[in-house]
Length: 224
Picture 1 (tube, rainbow, N blue to C red):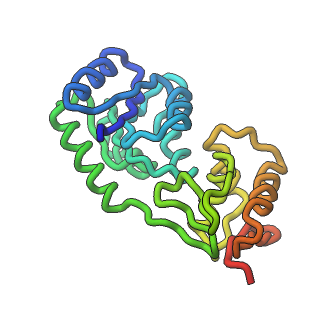
Picture 2: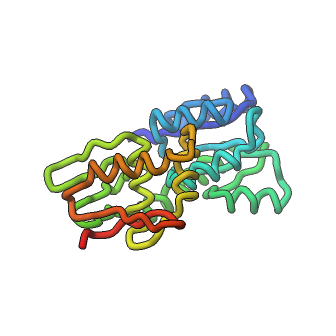
Picture 3: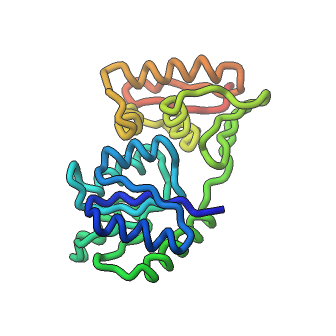
């Protein structure tokens, strides 16, 4: 199976270099030149790995990375950037990057780093999450019940995914708001409540419940 990459790079020369040289090595590369374009591409299809420039024209790449991680997106990320100060490298890693490569770089080294990050990602791949009669598939793209898939919108799935990963613990309203904001959702005062209400209706009868913890947030647990 070909490895799918998304390169977020606004320099057309570097973008063409990546497309040509990584294509020669057998990778399938898609390109985006802004953070907004990258967010759209990630909603359309999740790549095996993201190559992320930090100096993007519309916003800092590290902000995009933090939002992806806040939304639960675990796509492996290698930052490709001209920022070579240690504090900037540490900042990129703390934002959620798996590796960091300074421009200009050697394509052979980039290839080696891609393979190393993907190997680590395979070892750390999330397992299926089970709460009550609900199962979040290992690829986290589908919610399953005893009778098969349960239809959720992508945003509903993102909210429930965060609740299931934290089953038995309170997830604050602010954290769920952050999750939706990372998907470019227009957040109003009642947005989180609306999504939680919809999810409650869809998972009713599957041995789980979402408890409102007033003043704090929501807790997903096996029904008592």
